Image (cartoon, rainbow, N blue to C red; front, side, top):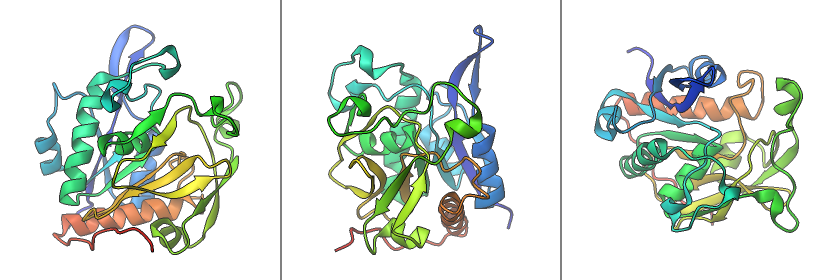
Length: 259
């Protein structure tokens, strides 16, 4: 059997400020190919081009990537403000429906940054438009200037629930991560389990209670140097293993809250 296929949800951009493209970061593809051991397949994030049933039929799992546009607050019952930034309604429409379908079926998904926020919104949660404006919170945004290495520098710890899902995957209860986001979870959806938090209490790792498959999501960017990073590597390896089991027709035991 060949490698499982992971659909990488792309983002819409203007190339050279004029030519519309769907694109995905190469580090996402390398993380999937080199660490998860799967075949990366870039998915145009527009339901006018692809449907959720078609995607589910041709992929064994999905990577919900980060991206500059934010989930539109109408998706969680709030009005848009300047603080909410840019939007991509086509990606909202595709990714939220896809997330709910995968949670229901057990098809593996891994959410990163915006993808982390999509998982929460898809499952009935809400978001803060700007974490750094909240009392007691640190600035989780990346430095506006500097090299790629400086932007993706490890900047804070994440502490996982003892004996929880992420503690098991990582083999450690406290890990060091990068941080490149403005928004964050305000209220988790009814089944969204916050399994890891930053030092300031910001949710950083979640999964879906009772989901019959791999439904992990993180607020940081594990795709950066995923093959070398001791936090990123086990996360993508676990995702790849879940996709291989799905492709082979094996189904996992539902994820449940640690007690």
